[in-house]
Length: 104
Image 1 (cartoon, helix red, strand yellow):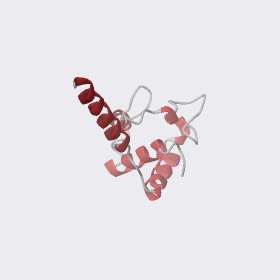
Image 2: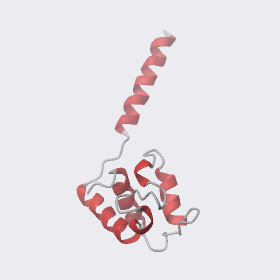
Image 3: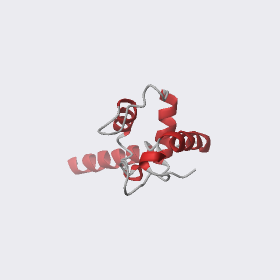
């Protein structure tokens, strides 16, 4: 009986996790792409990957949104803080663009 309960809980958690993935409108991704190209591409590369540049954003874990928001807002290592320039909406759009893998 315990095995059935555990199996049910595992399946439920897998279903909830799969359903928890964010979806973004094409407009939101495009807004993020615009912000990215104007402010981020110089360091992170035009498609989020520059072998000579900063962190490869294509590999950013989708379950670490708060880390992304914190890094963009407050800066990290050699990345300056962008919280004074970007609104919360701008950062959400950047997140959408990064999670879309740089596709617009």
